[in-house]
Length: 124
Image (cartoon, rainbow, N blue to C red; front, top):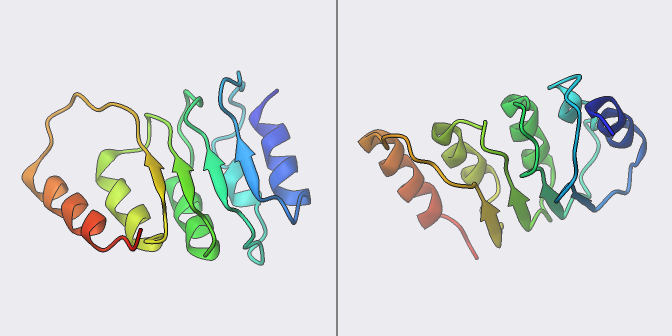
């Protein structure tokens, strides 16, 4: 399937609790599919987009994470910049699982400090 299908799921499945794309092949047609979740949507418990090869809108992801107080699992794809992970953690300190893949690039000290602080503030 493709990201247009994901946009339709986001827009129409108002009680969706789990979106797990593990081992899925998703054709990228629109990196803004996460913005199709309505502003009133709050029921997400688990989001796994680790298999996506293309970028997603990080700002839409941050807004979605902000709105979902029961989110426990967040597994991200590689193209999300490492320096944005701390923002996501601060928006969801209730996370039990936070998957980010493997990063081989240089970890700047300010990014490391920001991530350390964000992990420290997690409640679980």
